[in-house]
Image (cartoon, rainbow, N blue to C red; front, side, top):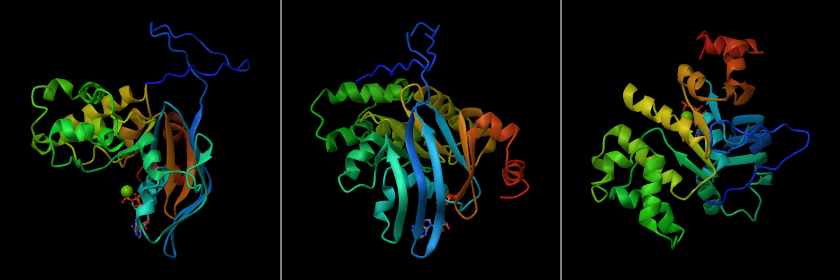
Length: 277
Ligand SMILES: Nc1ncnc2c1ncn2[C@@H]1O[C@H](COP(=O)(O)OP(=O)(O)OP(=O)(O)O)[C@@H](O)[C@H]1O
Ligand SMILES: [Mg+2]
């Protein structure tokens, strides 16, 4: 993978990490941003003038009551909503400053950079190896596919459990393993951002906790944007939290600790403390 040195900026103090990796702490770089983002399904508005700047190499949690537009927001980021005929988008949504809805953006190439993992694990009815290699094959990857498959399965904390059965069907794995397989499939093409829509809500607590640990590791290399209905999960795993409320408004976006301990908006406090939603 091409590793880019972070830009040094004389106004920002960079500290050399003490963990021996040589990685420097970086100023927050915005990877995905929106300005006045409106989304409609026919005449129904699902997102209402959303402004957000999502930082790189962080976990951003998206929370809010059912129907407030969380999945809609996630799908806008890698243009999955293109596939919904009645869906219309206004405003700006940028990836590294480039509007993803510009005419010259290829949605397939965009999805290679911004992968997605869904609520229900959805491996293809193919071998474990072919599931992970799927995106690489589509893009005509001509490197060492087996090495990339191994790397992705290791990155998804699944390698040790499946390394002797790469030719068996992905569908024969447990639910938690299937979800990690889907994460391996998402990271194999080496994306920058991984969108996750309630990735643990169909899993038992042990499998869910493995995915949470994995997210903590993934964020070293990727930016993770995760929708969750589970407040404890959002509080545990995310750096930033965005709270959407009914009507598709982004009501508050801040450091996760601020949102959970000291929210500005009374509606956010009510939602978090379970008074509504
Ligand atoms: N394909 C679609 N066609 C028409 N309306 C849709 C479509 N998808 C979502 N909507 C509507 O858009 C609004 C936001 O839906 P969305 O699925 O984004 O909410 P959500 O916050 O993810 O909800 P949940 O927590 O239940 O998953 C809802 O009113 C929903 O009915
Ligand atoms: Mg949803």
